[in-house]
Amino acid sequence: MTKINNGIVGPSDMFSNIMIRGKRDFKSAISQVLTMINRIDTNDESLNKTISNELEGSLRYSFLNQEGIDLYDMFYGTDTMAKRLSKIKADILAGKYPEMLT
Image (cartoon, rainbow, N blue to C red; front, side, top):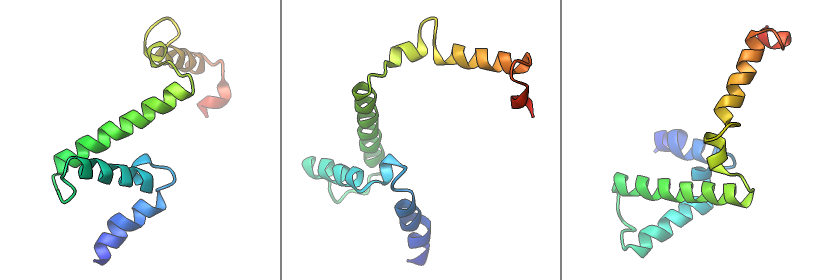
């Protein structure tokens, strides 16, 4: 039992404030979904992983919409994240920011 507490329960509680899947509300939501589909007593790893992935994706998408962040513009167009990061990298390597090379 000590290995479970030290390896799973302890770290889960420690990082619960910074990880979505570690929050009690998230775990409660998964239990509610399992109850709704009458599988609360399941140890089906694939099912639990699918539910967790869908729930986390839904929460992240909801947050992005709430904050007005457009995912399409991040990845397509003339001012994408990749293009901006590439420009910063090129500027650093060209010596525009010498303090970043040390």
